[in-house]
Amino acid sequence: MNAHIHSSDILHRRANPHAMIDTIIIADDHPIFRAGLGQLVGGAFPHLAIHQAGTVDEMLCVAEREGAPQLFTVDLLFPGMDPAQTLPMMRRRFPRSSIAVVSMLDDDATIDRVMGYGADAYIAKSVCPDRMVAGLRQLQQGEFVVLKPDQPSVQAMPAPPAAPPVLTDRQVEVLTMLAQKQSNKQIARSLTLSHFTVRNHVSLLLRTMGAATRTELADKARHAGLIA
Image (cartoon, rainbow, N blue to C red; front, side):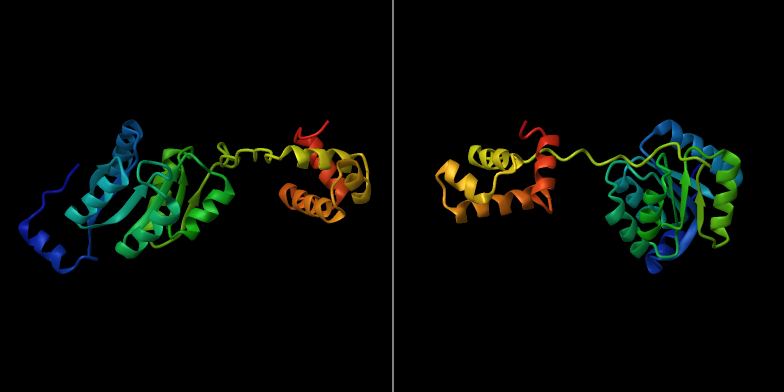
């Protein structure tokens, strides 16, 4: 649903770039969800024009063309969106517009980060339509809103496990003997190395493996499959 735009409105926006108009911009790269949210919001706020965008660039173009909306609803992960960069940028460019993130993710850590980036509301896609509309009404009244299910349905993606470090053959030899509880002096004698060189190898291995002691180093090396 698009409101008819008069030439006087356009002149007013150019003179007042931060002035808000009676629109909502729904930004999400899933057309079905975007259309469904548009119908839901349009039914709840019939006096507001609804504009849709599938990317961040398209969303910004609509906002520049039509004027700063009363409300942005934005997905957390869609083309062009970097929450840590995009949300603060939107906050600066559209200081009077409300920004509601509507996302599949609903874990507390993600919500806390996003609200810290400048969002006014965080609404999980898994909440029921009535709660979503009620939350948007609260947002229009100037309240900060967080809506999520009682039990998180989607956790933040865990970081991939770190790959084991790549060690030289000499480092593996030192590590193997260290795990056999040989002293630096014994390792130096067996490998025909100076005590100073062995000490450097051990220090580097401790830092590389993030270990505080030789025993912890040996345990981490075995767990990573670096030694038997």
